[in-house]
Image (cartoon, rainbow, N blue to C red; front, side):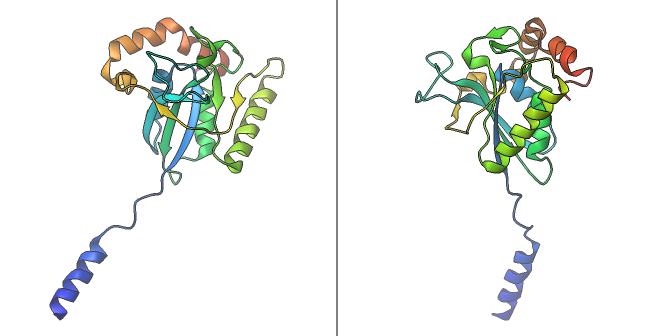
Length: 193
């Protein structure tokens, strides 16, 4: 019996400590394909899902109705590796905060930029980050909204990981949309990094 107890104790001590606690963040920055691709590259981000949020319509779909929703991403991340502040910093250099009609070649309500904080601390950080952008560009109006997080609806599977599933089409779309060119014009050569 003692040998069994010692074996169990040895096995339990070999089990690694509990897995990291993951957090989620929600951002809208125009085309969710591009936002998904940009955030997936960040160390500490374990998953990025494309979808819709911000509206009241239940079960929005890309091919059907998503009226009132933003194209958005749900970012799952390890806060011990990347902070919410660092995700905000990444968000800003991947959007055009001065366009109230959409982002880059995509126009319409669902393509506008927004941050969806999930609590008071995230809201304070989001508001401070927006104020920093406004201070950096005092002659321009920042239209990026800060809205409370609401239900997130993943888009159809076809749109998930689009840049990986369709790399040539994705690169063609991104270039022709002028996204990187505009980001560099606003944020400089390190935009998107």
